[in-house]
Image (cartoon, rainbow, N blue to C red; front, side):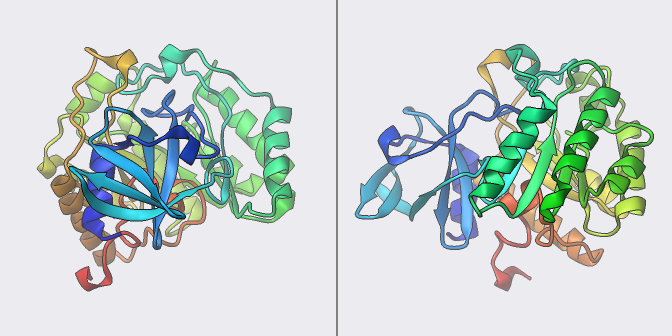
Length: 329
C-alpha cells in the first residue's frame, strides 16, 4: 500500500466485508475501539485494523486468494486478512482489566462494565499464545478497576510469571510514583503511558480527574529508566485540537525522549453527546505523520525499533518510519 492508501483506510476506519471471509476476529476491550468487531488487513509490508461495518464506504470482495478493497467501485487496495495472535498479529497483547474508574469522555470502557481477568487467566492466555510458536512479544495493558496501584501490582505479577519466555515485554498502565523502577526491575523492556491529548484545556474536559503533568513526569522518568526508543505514548487526534497544538505537543514529548503515537479519534455510540469527535482525514493524517517523522529524525528517535505494543503492530495508526515511503526521508 502507498502511504496515501493506508491513510485513507485509517481515516474511514471500517470495511463492509462478508464475515465469512474474515476467519478469526476479535472485539477489542481497551480504548476508544472497545466493543467493536475488528480485524487486520495486510498488504505488502503494511497492515491496518478495520472495524466491521456494513455501512462503510469501503467494500471488500474476494478475488481468488486476495481480498480487494474498493471505494466507489474502484480498487484501492489488495491483500489478505491477517490472523491475530491475541489482539494483534505476532503479540500476546492482553488487557487485564476491561473496566475503569476514570471517565475519559472518548472511551467506552467505563460504560461497558467488562471483565477483570485473574492473574492465572492472563498467564494461561500467554502460555497458549506461546504454544503456537508465533509469539514474538508480550504486551500488557489495563483499565483501572479499583486503583492504579493495584493494576500496577497485577501487571508486575504477570511480568514475573511470563518473563521466562525470553521475549520483549511491554506494559501500558496508568503510572504511579514508583512504576518505572518496579517495572524495570521486573523485566519490562518498553513502557507506554498515554497522554491522550497534549492540548491542556481539552485534557481537562476529556480526562476529568486525571493529571497530565503527572503523566508527563512519569514519561520523562521512564526515559531515564528504560532509555532511548523504549518509551511511547498514545496521542489522540480528532478531539478538537488544532494542528498547531499537535505540533507543539509532539515537540514537547520528543524533547523528553518520548515517541508519540498519533491515534485517530473514534466515536463510540456509548459516548454520543459527551465529547466532540472528528476522525482525521487522510490529508490530515499524512500531514501530521510527516511532521512527526521530521521531528523524530531531528532528535534521533525512531518509531520502527519498538518490539512491543502499538508501534510494531501499526494496525491502528500511521507509523512514521514504516508507513511513509523512503523517498519522503
